[in-house]
Length: 211
Image 1 (cartoon, rainbow, N blue to C red):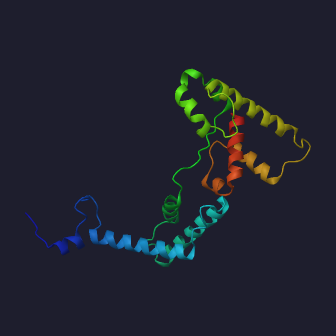
Image 2 (cartoon, rainbow, N blue to C red):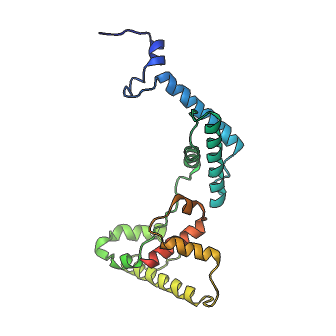
Image 3 (cartoon, rainbow, N blue to C red):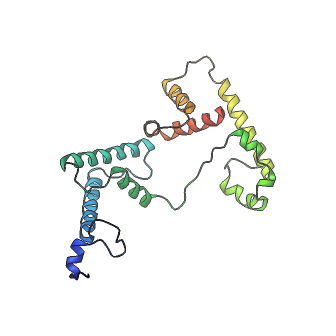
């Protein structure tokens, strides 16, 4: 049998035509979207984004504030609210404010670096891009062998300098925490939130040395 209903009735009772598998009606989905947008505007007014140039710690505190607002909303609504989770609001803002290009740092174990030969590298592409995508302090020849040798020398030099620096000084609590995190196989969300960007870079560096 065929059931005929008006467009207004279908809007209130049926899912969108392009998503017939959903249980929610098109009207309910629109209402939820409006509620999410309302909460997002309200929360960002109360806890505005600290800015693109703000520190990693400042951004983490902002994210925690959004999470707190989300949890408070759930408690007040007896867990029936359609409010967006804090990390979703943060993600939308960060993507909107993100620069067109970002600098990517790639950490590679020294053993893996030494195994990479010229045969595995596109020589022409490497030569044309190393001055923009490689280490900015590299001024040598634009070929992989020279660049790899220089990277290994820099790595060895850094390790030697660290060994010579205050050998008898007990490690600080921060250094101990970084060393403990570096020994972990997998970091938890709590581990990541509780360190700043410089400390996380040091954790990643130590992980490569351990390998």
